[in-house]
Image: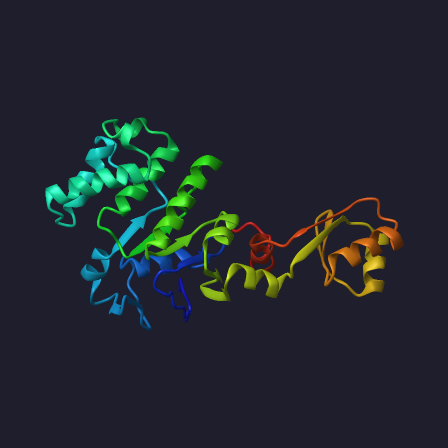
Length: 285
């Protein structure tokens, strides 16, 4: 069973993230939302319509950015968008006007007549995003939207997604870049083994499962004895110890003064810390 009795709701106009290790069930969930995989039990509605009976209507309101850049390499940038517009029966004059707007939006006007195969990875990703917006979707589905991109290209796409959200577009995404989800999403779920482990805002989830800060120190017997004496929550991770303090400044001073430690570091807790705590650190494949 790919997903097991999960329940969630996504509000109109919000950015919602699905997180989980490979095989967790998030891709299957996204495919069901897209009306690609059938819902065999339970009920799933998109915009108030059942995905098993209103697939055509739902797809007309939806744009999809797949993980792979499945562009037509035999077409130019412009032709990729024009041909795709025909799937939605958009009148040619209206489609041409919309394509001009989209080329401006994703900064590809200068590449309009370039063959798609010669584009950089970042340009291809931006073209895939533009293509997903041809039908002016109310819901945008993004599967690893910035995979393999350099920091400049990632930040450009982040800016575009924030702009779409301000326009009222509902955005659903999955990403292995947890800083991306932490920065962009209003709410998220973490999935594993077909179940939802946690749901909430990025900051709320971090605070609930980790706290605000983490202290990192090198693992040794003296530190362990010191932590046991202080009755502090901690986790041993290889050669490091992650300590979860109620007051990071106070505990840092204690560790340096009382435990004779020469080096420790304190940092804000992140969504990645939550992810690893909930799903483990073992490689899945």
